[in-house]
Image 1 (tube, rainbow, N blue to C red):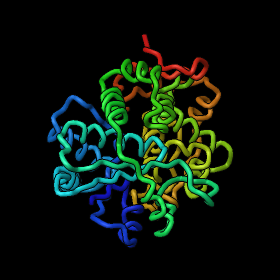
Image 2: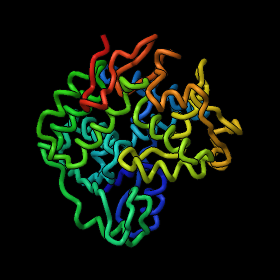
Image 3: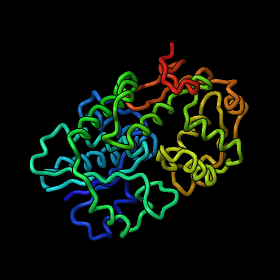
Image 4: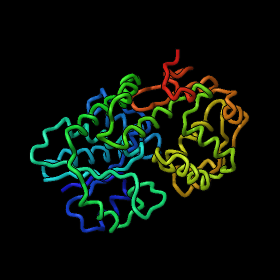
Length: 327
């Protein structure tokens, strides 16, 4: 039996249990950076390794080796009678889930059974962020209720990954008009993804706008800002490094919307000692009086879409709650 967990925390807890089989920590961040679906797997992994290395200041060889190793573990699935996917409700997890289901859908499973554990809450935990919060006994309690992945779920995951990784948003917009209930948390996650696109109001996505609002409301120190963000935007499932990088991008722009104090490395302890302040541009953006993209241009990947240049090809309209083509 092979268990695939979204990240090291859950995998580490699972290894301390009596759950049978091997445990694979899925180390990726496909909700961030380039994820173009048209590439052959070796080229895709090469692109992802370059992104992870540059973003998280990890040696390229290490990133490439880790991605290669975990895909080699996937390719050994015929050695197992069952593969169990352990994932959560948030965008970060749902993107990994559809990637993996799409990966398995391209292969003949043979005698291997594919099962899923995917939850959005847990009894006794008032604010549930993810499986990493659970102890050994709580994690094990989920195992008997795992469900075999259905053909409908596989088909939906294939469509969803293709839409997420497409070079434009039309497939994603059309997908959200269909029934996504086979994967109960997918619709909310994908709508949250659309809200990450630069808004028509100020050129910032929902994550950046939430960060600016929290900073304006007194959460300048990252050790206060990050937990406040988790409370307000739990459906994203981003970790401290992802939120820090989103905000640092605003501070590093030619016309910065934030001022970053501390200039730390991506070491978690150093990140939590950092702080952010609004610049005049940032304060004006909160009032809808300045546009980040117009002021600074853009070079950002959201799934398979590369927004680049002096204007964003796609913009999120908060009033109509729609993703619009920028003319």
